[in-house]
Amino acid sequence: MKKVVYLIGIVFVTLVFGMVITTPSESAFDRWVADEHGIQCEGDGNCQKGQQYLSFSSSHFKNAGVFVSEERTFEDSNGEETTIRTLGVFGQLIDMERGDLWEMLN
Image 1 (spheres, helix red, strand yellow):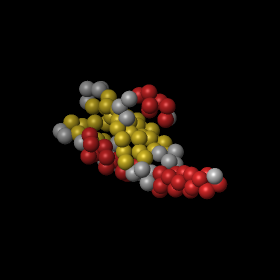
Image 2 (tube, one colour):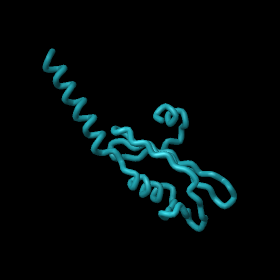
Image 3 (cartoon, one colour):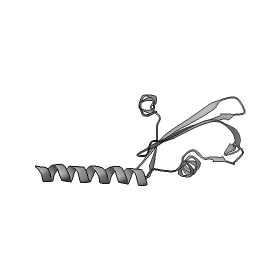
Image 4 (tube, helix red, strand yellow):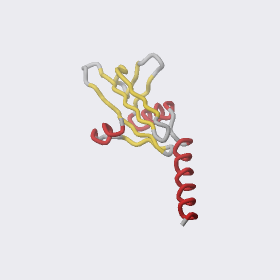
């Protein structure tokens, strides 16, 4: 019985360690937004999606150690907002379209 508990402990610690070292960075999120949504941003907050210019209006980045969450809101010239919510875990970024899971994690 002690061996089983010891083995479960080792697996759990290894899993958490793997999650911590593979947590995506904010720059990985920037690359993901460019690849998945076609939004390229400059350092001054001006962004472009195709021929359309967007302004960067707000951002939220949370690094919880084992996962990261990021939310960015862009506004176009007509005042329409585009919000991108992402969960990052095990080196992967996942688009969070459902708001209820997002609210639970943040």
